Length: 269
Image (tube, one colour):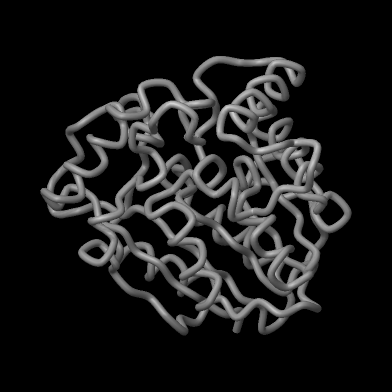
């Protein structure tokens, strides 16, 4: 997930989240559910619904230790922890999102199951063979070195561990509409084709259990949680500038085949 365009202090982050929660008619003094926060904290194509679909495919178990790379506000981490009771480590490069994730973990009463780490996907701060599953949604578009990324994922997974992801891939023509949710301009976007993605994953030691193009199925809900929200509704606009424009550009890029949406579940050999 791309970081915030403006840097906020931890106190500012907390104030913005609490104001948005209260404006939506929710009481932050009472335990909130991941479902209630879904429009705020699932910043990827398809939003909360896409996370539910990937969760079903990933076959996460209660005893699993899961790593969410590029976790953003840790929406997926809270969904996993609440549904299965598993332990989740969330890694996020942006200190702003880390601060927001810590607050939201506390508001949902899940801070005892989720740990937030500030760090890079290219240098994961975990020992080898640490996780049963690695989860990643719409992150690789901001990372040029895909081989290093997948090598790090492979390194921290246990034998027979699972890598579940959702990702934007390059389409038949170059991406031309900016800004996008993950990139203000072309210099921030590092898309590769679905074929190249699968090839690099195989070279990194992974075996595909599932790899599919879901562009058509998800087109109707592209950036579903990034559309303009009515007053009093939770929205990513709490954090993301020019949200409607970015969501519109992503949808147009998907419609015209400039980008594709893929998801997969791969296992360690």
